[in-house]
Length: 395
Image (cartoon, rainbow, N blue to C red; front, side, top):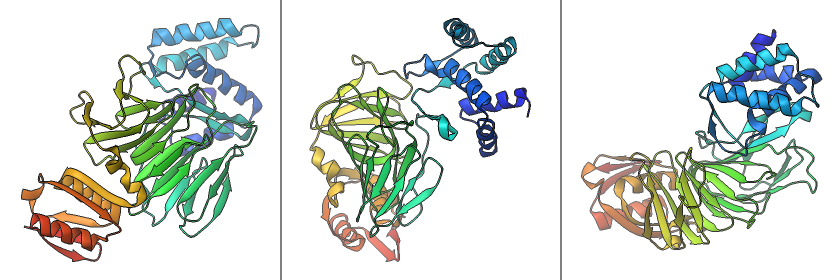
């Protein structure tokens, strides 16, 4: 393969557009020490001088950045005119690309840097929760099983009896962290302890993406769905949760965050501490970030994309799901249906659209779906049919 072809693949990879076959070609190319050095130079050009901030880079700035890189590395590396021209061509191709900012490496094993920024994730369709490892391997987490697996960076992952998963990094990490995904299907919930001691409860139909251990200036995780976080305190390393439209930044606190793709609102309730909220694509600014205080609920409408709305609340109601309780306050029937579908792993078809916007409140503890529907029937006067895992609300 010619230099021109591999540089095209490099551009597609850094742009996060590379296909599986191209990534395989790139991994084979990286097996050569000379190619690793060239890749390292290219990677440094685009990422190393940035302090984990997203920048919109135009062609003029890209070229200037490269020239500065040459000047600062003249005494360390001999860079040929041919390589210079190749990289300048890549700089031209990169016009307008948004470059991410949290990089994790392991060149010794041929692993490629991974950029941690939000992308859509799908909850598993399996009966059990799963861990997707850095190699793409799917590990099912059976409720009655104990398992151990070791990541390529040496981190030990333990699956205990029940739905508990813990990460145990080596005392002296010599390799860069790698990314894992924990996915929870409908009808399940999982407890997770990250490498820094942060505790995460993942609700039904949710996915969390996270590094096997934290080794940078920030602790970044990605969430699709709902989770409760008890963040280990570390004033020198902020903890950031990225969702589809909103980011949450804390130092150490307890909060519940709901960001389902199917819901129009992202909601956060705070039990302890303080959090700062800022929109996706923005840099964190402590003066402009929305500050949430304990016993407040923050709500952000993804469709309207307006300011975050704050109201007083009892946060324990919104996080009671982690104790096996289903509580809701003034939820319209459309939202309630989706919560019941996720909680009980059922399908609910509503043929009575007149009740879609009626607000419901309720508390359930260990009731099955039939008991819940009977309670709604008595209080709202609805009629329904239950057949297997499908419920139909009658007009």
